[in-house]
Length: 503
Image (cartoon, rainbow, N blue to C red; front, top):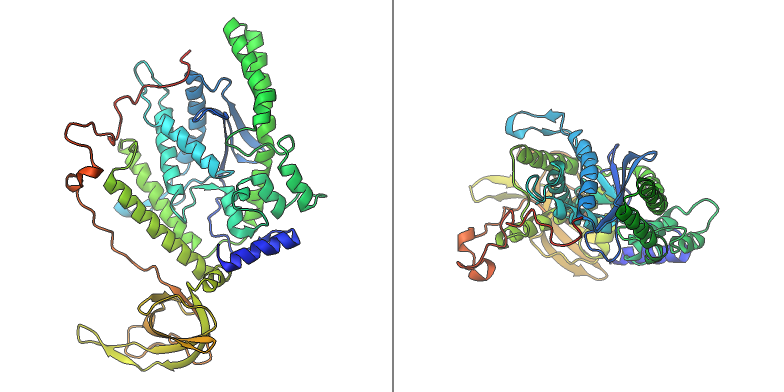
């Protein structure tokens, strides 16, 4: 946590009011997001209990698994949820822009869940579904594996910084507002909303007390409250099992209705909070560069959609050594680009990075707009020197490439030298881009003495790392000649269900 971020949290604690950390919302917010609140059975890993899903506050569907340990009921639930999600995804697979290989869908879906636990629940559900067989002794409806593959794709994109196709609302809120509680407590949607927008007539302290009371604010998932499980859920499931065993249609219908009402009481408060949070986030202006990142989402969505239309295989059970390295490289690159975009767009974020020495701002002391250098190709090009005086701590070395939100688009520079001067620092930068094509820099493209401007590192373009071919990986990172390939795309037991009741 940076100094300014820590100060924001301290201020929130002293004033008992959430503090803005950014000027803009750096995540795209769809005009028609699909909200999913998944619930899983406590103590039963991967056993879905229910999900409330919908694209409007008053248009929701509640799906419940009466007996989460029953395989058939789990996959009936997955099929019902899959049909809703796939209809939503397919609604974005209509309008394409561009021609040929460069065409892509003009819009992309967005699924919102309450917290990171919701993403984990969807990841488990996708893993449970994507390898299922639609024929044979363990057959499931056709939509189940398709749904599982799309869920896995969306969960994978959620790990990529800056993407917006699957997002936890708590992350969006805590990115914009600082609270007086810990990062872990910020994962509780009710607690986070108590700081940002307490209910009418309640103070933040009162709202926090209610948020910690599972009878008033049931957990936002994915696991239910242990007290609820012991007092209400377990007896209701037992009554359903008894009615199912007896085969009495009336008792079975009554038990299902009771269980559905119990789950609805648990999930409806979170559903209302989700849409309140979405309204709050809509009130925050979107960052200028969010539109460019959204285009990358559309391209990624189009690429995977075309892959599925071509009959592509399910995602691997686990990455190979090379696949993991490539994925790590992509994640690192996306994070660097996203952090640079945020600082470029948002003065609050830029100030945060300045406090950590990762950016700087100052006043121009000297400028050499007429400086020329000879390139390796024996061309004379302008390379003005600009010297700034800054009070910021500098942790950037000479040779660091820079961009500036204070200058016209395309402006680029590189640090030539850094010299302490008393309580301040003199930073000399060489302007390398954004001056036009003539030998004389265009007007306004070179900073002038007395001008105040800011610089931050340019993530720039980086070549894709070259990794060895699969047959050249060390024996420590690949199976031996007599060992099965545990990383095969589709496991041999894909249709088998290893645990749970089959009745």
